[in-house]
Image (tube, rainbow, N blue to C red; front, side, top):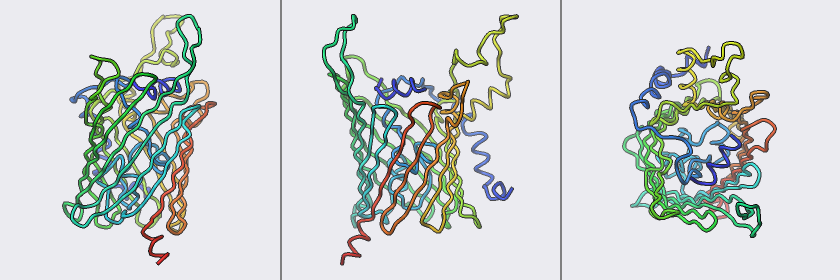
Amino acid sequence: MSVHTFIEDQTKSEIVRNLPLKLLLIVAFVPAFGSLSFSQIGGSHTYEFLNLSNSARVAGLGGNFLAIKDNDMTLTLANPSLITPEMHNNLAFSFVNYFTGPNYGYVMYSRTFKNAGSFVGTFQFIDYGKFTETDASGNTYGSFGASEYALSIGWARKLSPVFFIGANAKLIYSQLESYKSFGIAVDVAGTYCAKDESFTASLIGRNIGAQIVTYRPGNRESLPFELQIGLSQKLKHIPVRFSELITHLERWDLTYTDPSDPANQKDPITGETKEKTGAGKFADQLMRHIVLGAEITIAKTFSIRIGYNYQRRQELKLYSKPALAGFSLGFGLRVKMFDISYTRATFQAGSPNPNYFTVAVNLQQFSKKKE
């Protein structure tokens, strides 16, 4: 199990008419198929850092991937089918101040070759900071660090005017104190994008791979494989785009028993534990698969983003003070060839919460301007 998993566990009317019917059907039925698929238990995988939100825009809409085809290179790490030739010579940096201590970031660059196609290279890292080394009696022997890295190359191909496919190949390295591990993985994705680019749908299989070198001999761990669907709908007469992310199609039940949840407390008189109704339990399990987001664009240069992650809220909120747990708010600003984004995500009230910063620059425009 990676250090990231441990830290996360501890901190743990016009609109409707414009939404396609197929979007609503997918919301209602797709996650239920996960009950027939291979089930996984959260926290039992290594390299969990691969699932972190890699850009402020992605985080601002509440999830760790998006299905928006508008030549934003920072979306391609999680959804390689969004890679386009228009991203040629684009460069992007992301940095996240992640809770207390850990920090992580990304560097991305895109290049299109005449015969080979369009590619995006990404280097990502997470530094968990310094830890005090002690023995069982509390004697201190110094300190140690922990960090993880991944290098990925993404490629995409256009099958038709509306269908696109893509894949990422990843090399992964992890060092936790004196324990080292190496792994390989791929992401595969397919995207449908309407000709007017108002509606986009993506199907993604992430982190398909294996741990090649284990932390300890004979202790091979699985990667955080996940099946996801992303949907986005842009309204016709209002500059608003709605996003919906459907996560963990490979597993239906994402709930767990929280002993601190008032709903799990025994009745002092009868001694019975309160339980949700069948409909309430189904709704709770369904919503844990769904992340909702909205993006408002003003004059094509300024965007306001808001996201709601139900599962994050249910797992990390304080029952005495839920506040805005599970919500995220951010903005994006386009200045000539620069795109600047910032997001503040609330995981838990009263605790340090992540700040996401992303800067992207179109070097191609910069070169033309210089010429």
